Length: 100
Length: 334
Image (cartoon, rainbow over all chains, first blue to last red; front, side):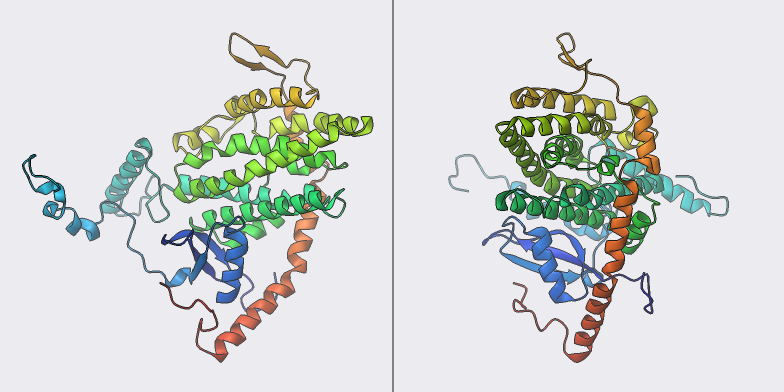
């Protein structure tokens, strides 16, 4: 390791998102380390798109992402579970009504 | 897991509930994701396995990399370049997966170059002829495919996803190796001898890639229970043999095992026992190329230090100069 101020510190971690082709959303594909944004983009190209996997790349410092917890029972998501009237199957429509 | 005496009892109860929820997820074949609660043993096992896997990909660049400057044609050179670059990529996907578990990249690199973490013993064998490039693609990448395809269903999400990407690329690796050998066996008598010689040297070490026999594999049981691993070492080894025998026949080479024969009752091949003492020796550091591989990796890391420092200094200077991120062309995220 080098003799810099913080010898253990590597480059910061970036998360990588790739648009596979036009018409699709960017999707998270993994992460990488880079010294700055520009290097993160070129490294992401070399690492995650060696076989035409993408037409557009986003990179973002991992530390800049704010996330909910991944716990399924988290009360954070509770409000979406108890509103069954938001789903089309909540409504009884007679079978002889067409196109609905 | 167990709680210490000093921990308040409420924590113990909560932890037990988390453990139960984790066990249910594993039983129902749900994926575990980075921010989920997981037992310490699960996390440690994964970090160890993923890191060793990553290190293997990185060290795995060396045996074939030695042939890049000596490849017999521009076509073979370009293919070999692409393959070795893929190995680097695989290492990085896997380091990325390990980092979702809280491992630090600099720490993982340090553990590799200080010898505290291992890599696959197969990469400690030499590559004296160009036929070795072909046989590595055929055997070593073929064995890797056997090992890795079931890992695409591993219980830990980021590991499974990394394996999906890797498996797609391994197929190219195996096929280029087999095609290379097909070309050589159509050549001169000397070339055919080179192929057979490489087959003789790589066959047993390739069988050892699957690890010790099931009765002697201390970590297997836990990894199977956690669904990190899906099949035992012996099962995967047997699959590899079944897969490879017809390919060897088609190529016209002999696999160097007098006990190898089809067993119609089992519907599988019987085969001999690898020299497990050799595997132990190579794992302990006494293989033909252990020292060379480690020295090369350590030197590459040390030689690259000034590049990493310069890039860090450049990034700091750019950051001090102007607004963050304004120099990228595709600035808007839409």
